[in-house]
Length: 40
Image 1 (cartoon, rainbow, N blue to C red):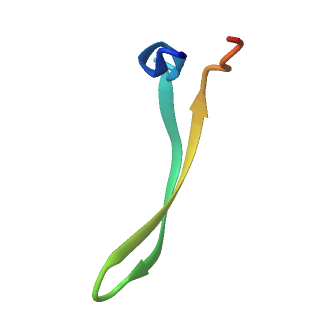
Image 2 (cartoon, rainbow, N blue to C red):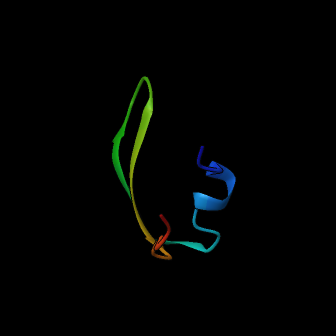
């Protein structure tokens, strides 16, 4: 079985955050930059 804790990229940067909707709830579009997973 795969250990998912090791499969998650450790370095994640938020590149850009945009407000898409703000009313009864808030909705943001988030652009991320992360490491590539080269595992099995």
